[in-house]
Length: 102
Image (cartoon, rainbow, N blue to C red; front, side):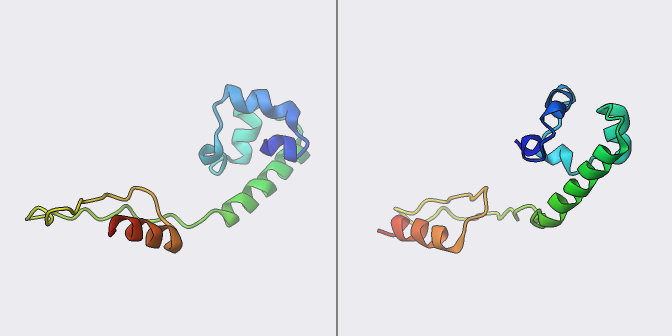
């Protein structure tokens, strides 16, 4: 979709063949565009690099891994331990706690 948005849909097969996903896209260099993806046109490579730079700037800062806590006693009856694996917005967290405490 990103290549469609850039009107470079003719490059989709190359990106697919090289298994370029969003995470990998943010790491690509001009050399990758030129050699691995075989994009000969330097202006297209420059445009891709500029667009990738914008994506990098807009990407959220990486969060540190969650801290693991050791529980020495089981929770009181009726309470469950929940491990949160994805960040929650404050409102989502409030709703989750509200539902859990009923």
